[in-house]
Length: 192
Image 1 (tube, one colour):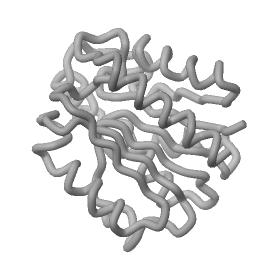
Image 2 (tube, one colour; image 1 turned 60 degrees about the vertical axis):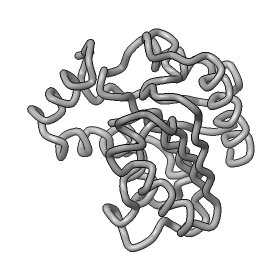
Image 3 (tube, helix red, strand yellow; image 1 turned 120 degrees about the vertical axis):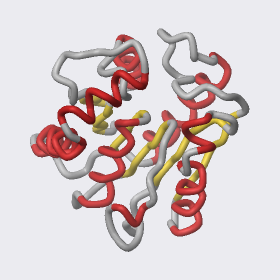
Image 4 (tube, helix red, strand yellow; image 1 turned 180 degrees about the horizontal axis):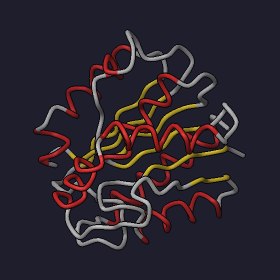
């Protein structure tokens, strides 16, 4: 099966992130969940992003790199929101990536190179009325990435929630979350 490194969102390594990873493990995948916040969790996105700003986004990316350094090259990088930046950066800059799954966010691929790497499949998931994904440029960046890459999919779900696949949060939307999970599992099976 597939080796996956899963990067958490701005609330930290929450029970919902652990539950998502456990579902992937039950399907036979090896999933690593580095804690980029070193044990801290937050109740709001603003608090988590504020903490990331305090320690520095460069430090967050360094922690992500160090977490990946101990893994074989052929992994799938999966990120949720803030964790997308780490997943996308590693998928684009670390040799041998098997793929990337970007949930709730996407940054312009030009942040990490001139083009999305050849032969690295990518899946992007977000809601059409999520103010973070739809209104802050992530959806546009996702469309540009998909248009530029040879194996890329963008899945846009109906709704306005950001963390819609985290079953432990009020933003959870079961139907969309189930569909996202089925698509991620298909992606991992196809790229393992």
